[in-house]
Image 1 (cartoon, helix red, strand yellow):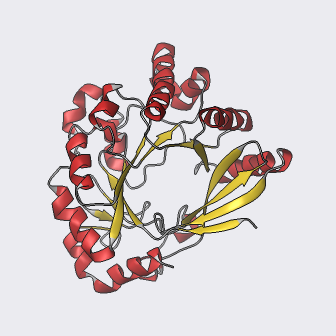
Image 2 (tube, helix red, strand yellow):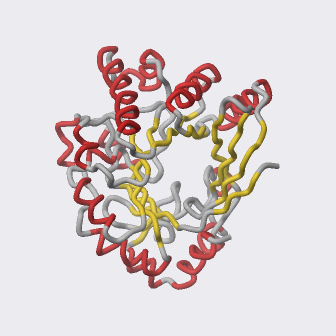
Length: 319
């Protein structure tokens, strides 16, 4: 069955911006449908028109949540976090208040970005879904031309290597779309000596699961370790190894909040169950990735004042 590892630190995800240079075909909006779809009609020159997480929200929103839920880690997400013009200041402010700061990025940023934040991140997770620019181009659809696809794909891989060279802890997230591409991504991570985590394509989760199971079976992989933590309430990770190659698979268990989920009209369509709290770019607290209502999206003051709901969230983190 493999070794069981249990982590205790609560991780709070923070959407620092909803915008992104990429348009991945498997992208799911996670409660950002309106802003994302509006952004898709814009160019990067219009970045100032989109809301970003502001520096003052660290004290106004993140610290109250830290004090109530004993949050230890901050995980900055997007969109693409490096497109937030205040990111450097936000990271430094978070470092002063939290045990660690992580970031998930597509890796498309100027090399000097890492110089500005040398030693600031406890982990950078790179979203890399193909090492081939041709497949990268396919994943992005028609909005990128071949020249842009080559440039972005090369920049992703160069920044991963640069982060490793600078001694920054690195992991790779890769959505499972097809077997050949997934094997190429695993090999790329293996050569760099970094962990790769395989994620389901939520637009076709059954196919992703079939591909992963085929890789495990035909590659002679065995379950080495199960990692259960409080970073994402419903998520856990399984580590597989065949003695030569190693990769991690992200899986979900059915964790619900009765106060929020009991009367839910779309519960049979739920993809990630109760995934933990995410703070939006405007500072609101989000409890569900698929709904926008008073029970799932609210101000931090409203959330903290609804004792049964807040207590249920705390209990779910330590299920």
